[in-house]
Length: 63
Image 1 (spheres, helix red, strand yellow):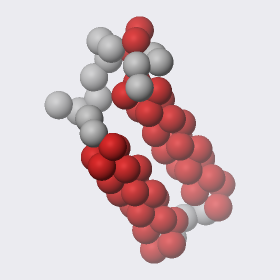
Image 2 (image 1 turned 180 degrees about the vertical axis):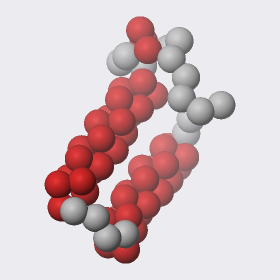
Image 3 (image 1 turned 180 degrees about the horizontal axis):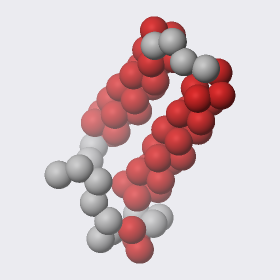
Image 4 (image 1 turned 90 degrees about the horizontal axis):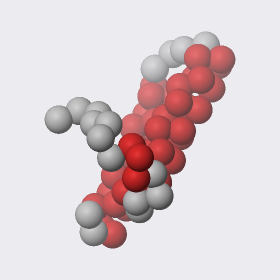
């Protein structure tokens, strides 16, 4: 994965999270939990992309 794709994924996730936070009415606690889950998932994905979590190589999310 090159740097442009990496940056695009992070930007798209950020924009989607912003859209959900601004335009979908939810309780503030639910939004906070959603934000935490998305950030943790993104951090795990980043660590996996850089090879720092090699033991997660067998786990696939999506296709």
